[in-house]
Length: 337
Image 1 (tube, rainbow, N blue to C red):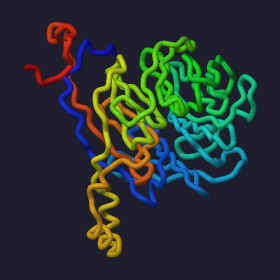
Image 2: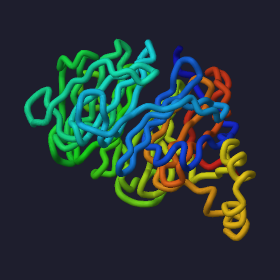
Image 3: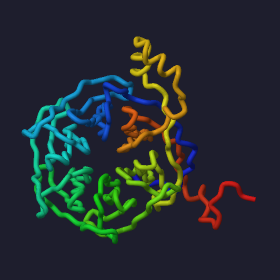
Image 4: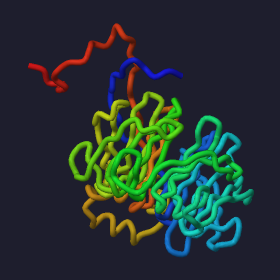
C-alpha cells in the first residue's frame, strides 16, 4: 500500500489500558499477532515470561522459565512474531535468539557470545524484513547484524562512535514497508535510518528534554503512513515524527484503569482505600516506557513498564490527494494571522 500524498491529522486520543500488576509485571516489549492476540514480554529479577493477551483485556496464559538451558530465558529484551506466529526473543544475558511457538513450545535458537561476525554481545532489538530475515541489534558490539531465521549471517554494519553509521549501545529497531531500517541509538540519543544494505540515509534527535530531543531512546517504529514513533524512555514519553523526521506530537500518558484492574479492585478493599487517598494525576503518566508497536487499525501500543500496563492510543488521520494539499509554506504554525 503506497504512502499517502498528505495527511489530515484529526487527533490521536487515548483509547484504553491493558494489563495490570501481577499479570503484566514490567512489560518490556510487545509483539502483535495476526490472530488478534498480543504477546507481552515481561522481565524482572527471577522472572522472564511471555504473556498472551487480547485487545479485550483477556489473559491467554503465559510461558517462560528462567535458566540458561535451551528453551529458557534469563534477561530477555525484544520479541517479534513471524507470519506463522512463531515468536523470536532476544536474550542479552544468554547472547542468543530463541524461537518458540505461540503456545510456548521451544523450537530452536542461535547465537553465541563474541565480537566476531555472527557472534553477539548483549543482543537487544529485533525486526523482520519483508523476507522474514531478522535484524538483530548487537548492542555491546555497537552494530547491527542480519540473519536468516536459522541463524545464518547475511550482513552486518556499524562500529562504536557517534558518526554516521556508528552506534553507542543501540537498542530498538524497526523496518518500514519500503525496507529501510531505523535504529534507536541509545547512548547517542538519536535515531538513525539506513537502507536495507546498511547505507546511511539520515539521523535525527540529540540529547535533551525538548521536542525532538531524546534521553536514552529505547525503541522506534514506523506506521503505514510513514510516521515515526520513538520511545523516549528517559523523558517518560513517546514522540511522533513525520516521514521526514519533523516533530509532530508527544504522548506522556493518559491512562485509566484497565478492565482487569477494575475487576481486581472491586474485590480488594485495601487497594481501593490506597487509591482513594492518592493523587490520580501522576497515575495517568507513562513511567519508563520501553517499547512501542502499531497495527493496521491505527492503534499505538506503549509498554508502560514502570506501571505494569500497556497504554493504547488511536490514530485519527485522513489520507489526502495532491489537489487537497497545498505546497510547503514558510510558516508551520496553525495560527496564521
